[in-house]
Image 1: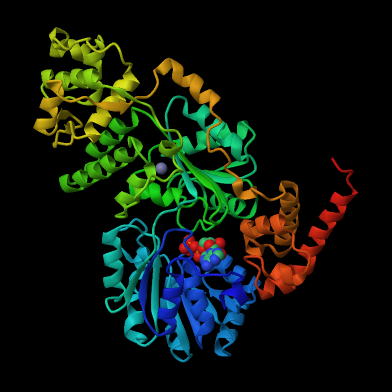
Image 2 (image 1 turned 135 degrees about the vertical axis):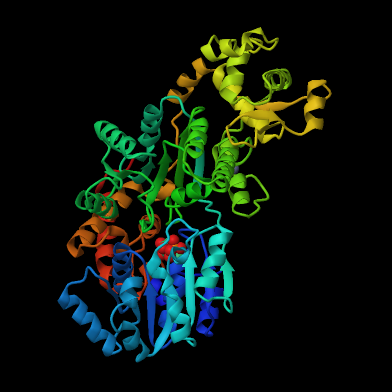
Length: 609
Ligand code: ADP
Ligand code: ZN
């Protein structure tokens, strides 16, 4: 079924185990990262088992794309949701009564409405698949009350396998899914949450707009997402990108429904659209060929960062997650939390999340190791695909500056935040300093060898090393960490080596010079003839337009890359290309061969080099 219908050679990760488990009648929770291949886990059993597979999915746009993609593969699939007109839904009902469907996609509210459950009860059912299952969790970030009603499936259809699928990486949400959907008897399948094709690049903020533009240079014509914290910043950045010639659209909850839907639609259907968005732009972005996700503001948490960056590179081709952050961002977020008016316990939790995020942005070693450790996975070796691995930083001896910083924290009374401590070290002349009498301290002005950014980085790293720690009242003050290491460092019995950012005046030049964003972000085309690839993309765009479907529904980039690289000349050779099943072979085979042949002839007509 995998080969014939979907055109793939082999299952990925735990797919085969899951498929076998479901075909044998078992229920399960499936935890796989975005792009991990969750859909096949229920689509293959749906085709192998007799009867109808019902897929519950929260978003209409997502359902439609899935149904369209399945139909292109020759599968009898349909969707029932509120946006369907009377004719179309009558046709779905007829197909349902006549057992003419293999897969039915339905929204959770539609499933609970009217007599749909009764009607389903009269048919032979293969399985239930509950997509985006974390929507059932009140603890998680996408809670949808309609999902709670899905508990009824276990009672009404105890013998039909239920498969809950999610990319959530948070144990508490996972546990809630199991109880709410009554999956205690089922198995749990977990794939690694690593996304090896995503390159993580973290930059220190200098001039974020200029840095973003220079990063985007390598991605002209590619689709991507830029996340910013507020609506106004989204609007500003979108305008800024458009002024620089990018096809950028803004997306946030403050837009009217119309323009918002239009932005989403353009992103899904057209090539090379950059969406500048708040976190409101999230679930349901199943576009496989998003080549970059950029953060110009810090995300809310490391989990949020993982989910947001996970929207890049679902097709498994190279993609980049890029982020700029500045020294001022963390204190600002701390203040947001402090001023939020939340319960103390909630505030502590939020501060904890922020600390985890700082652990990532300030990591001296591999980013991916930090990220995966946060998700409860261990990556034994550095990944080789993040800025820390690709651009190893030189460590310098910071023993003396670290001693000065520890002294300054001590002399000021172990209660001030990094900003104030750095002011003292640099000998700043501020009203606050004067009123506190801190100009009289012996540590005042003793740290002119580093600039503000370097001191900030050093303080964060000393915190990461446990030599300093936040004062637990949550006001952002710093105090000494573990007694013994602090003492040995101060007595000079131990040397400390850490990387430091370059001095401020050199930083701007360095940013301008480095063609940021990965040596070859679009190794999408690596090895393939780039011009042939773009001819194939033109052909695909035309097909997609004629059928009013997103281009990737016709063929994924990956399939086009393989076509361009191996240039098959016959139908049977075409059938060996990943992503070309029998229905697509029949539908597009001749046309693809014609594009390839046209290309070869044009090539032959060129005089040799
Ligand atoms: P998820 O829903 O987990 O985010 P999808 O089911 O959309 O991921 O799959 C992501 C991509 O990987 C899709 O383009 C899909 O066709 C592809 N894919 C999934 N499984 C396989 C496989 N076994 N072989 C090749 N490609 C696969
Ligand atoms: Zn790494």
